[in-house]
Length: 232
Image (cartoon, rainbow, N blue to C red; front, top):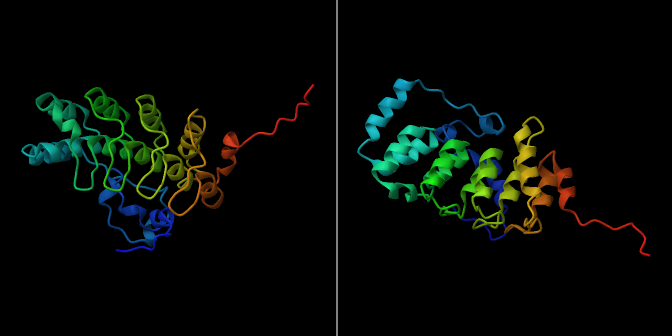
């Protein structure tokens, strides 16, 4: 699929966001109309027998196995795989998603912590230039985003289309989802944030927030202030 140079990647995310991996729902194949409300994401629940059967099928495919374990919050399984082969922490799928990416977009804090402790890099890139922090902020996983920032995640990283974690947090907010606002607050209070970075379509995250979310007022936190105290 070809796009003009000035196409808006955020609009593409709004129309095709259901194709981006996001935990158990990444395999969802519903229609576009059914996916319009991205804040309502029903994850399929499985019993332990289902997980054990899946693990049995993947036991001879360690790379696929650890990616699956990271996405599905199988901490003991992941630790066992890393104990057998520590290099698995750096593996990735055909789109460049590492175990850390999968844990980040699924919101699994314990898995993220285990992967970082096992030597995972904080800023691996997918083929589209996404870091785990981009993934966490896209899905409003504030606890994961906080942990990644503490462990050296690049706050102002830009995707191939110029999107920062702040762009993604600003474009996927909801007045009914408190973690949306909390994710924005987390990013906006970071000392080294560069809120003026523009995407390939020319928008700052603040401009995105003003047209697409209910929390644009939070960007007042990073607006230049006027000093009204008279100089003596």
